[in-house]
Amino acid sequence: MTYIPHGHHRIAGKRVDSEERFFSAPTTGSAFDFSAGSPELVAEACAAAQEAFAGFAATSREHRAKLLETIADEIDVRGDQITEIGSAETGLPTGRLQGERGRTIGQLRLFAAHILAGEYLDRRHDTALPDRQPLPRPDLRMMQRPVGPVAVFGASNFPLAFSVAGGDTAAALAAGCPVVVKGHGAHPGTSEIIGDAIVAALEKLGMDAGIFSLVQGGSRAVGEALVTDPRIKAVGFTGSLTGGRALFNLCAARPEPIPFFGELGSVNPMFVLPQAASARGAEIGDGWAGSLTMGVGQFCTNPGIAIVLDGPDADTFVQSATDGLSSIEAQTMLTDGIADAYRSGVHRVSEGAGVKSLLSTSCEGRNAAPYLFEVSASDWMANEELSEEVFGPLGLVIRVKDAAQMKEVAKSFKGQLTATLQMDDGDIDLARDLLPVLERMAGRVMANGFPTGVEVSDAMVHGGPYPASTNFGATSVGTLSIRRFLRPVCYQNLPKALLPRDLVNV
Image (cartoon, rainbow, N blue to C red; front, side):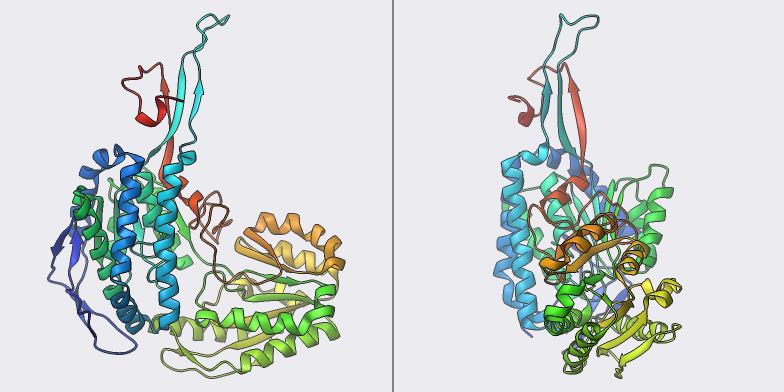
């Protein structure tokens, strides 16, 4: 391996060691020794972020855009090393990591362009009406301002796009908020090299080192210390429902509660409507198998449940999905813990009343192979556990007896990231009937295709009602995600000399 990690935290630009250590657990190659985080290091990082906030919030949009572009450049020049250590730590193939690096760089540049355009500021101006009766109106100007230092938790399943320099960090820096990142223990070397890239960008531009810190690993107390530090004003998190809800509760219980933007997972139901099933059931089944197993099923948007009208067309769909999944060999999951949780989830689903196994495999250690089950709508609605996410390549088919029962199944889902309609022109009436249910359930509703993955763009929504996320009004992907780290401020009768530069000519 050409890249050998130094194993240190990055606290306000400095390499910082700690007595407590941990080893990485790569799928291939050597394990490396890393400093483990502590509440004391978190406090040091948060203090530096708070000290840097005023100056960073006052920087121009042009200056922050330059920072984002420079971070992208620094990541790009480390590309081969990032791919090498990322693949060793996670088991993800080279092509996937190269694509994810491109997405990470792309979203940094997208946010640079977004803040330069200025629309995100939502600037408004009500001119003074001194002669208005019965009361005059003052001069009122409004714009969005950064909230303060932001805590970001790296995700296990996206070591680049949802981690140290991922969407949460890009959005926070674009808004003018310093960032303290807790690196994920599944890929500390990848986190380190990305953290070094951000530090290098800050140094190149002569900016305050307190704008960014990376605290590696550590116990649960490290994450708890981060979200409860009074200097942190918002949190971005991608991870499990259990872990996310625990941190959410801590944020809500603070003397000063703060917003916790947690993306917690989803089963992403796919409704196969009758005409589509009749015309191309085999095609849809095969496509579903590919979507289920992409990235060993370790995508938040993995469509784990398919709902189909019982009958011969459902049989065709199921057989095609079974055949497609049967050809997929066991693959390496991101961590031993995720693999263990997957096997537990498989067992839980298989033990459900009325659940029939369509494809059973065996997987050991860190490897996972696909499983496929089916259940009637009545049995599914009677067992809430069947609606819980199994993180991995597991599919569950729900057979419904008619369109009315399909709608009842749709109504029974909790909040989701996505909902998909597989439909043809002849399904439009049923789709129209389902749409109001789906848009209340999910952050993204799509027709045809498969939801695995997201497009980083202006219109994308990656969020949804709880438990898909802890804030139904937010997205963690796309330019709209910057709003999580902004708040509106109204300036009344301020002279132009005191106004923020971006408000002077509004």
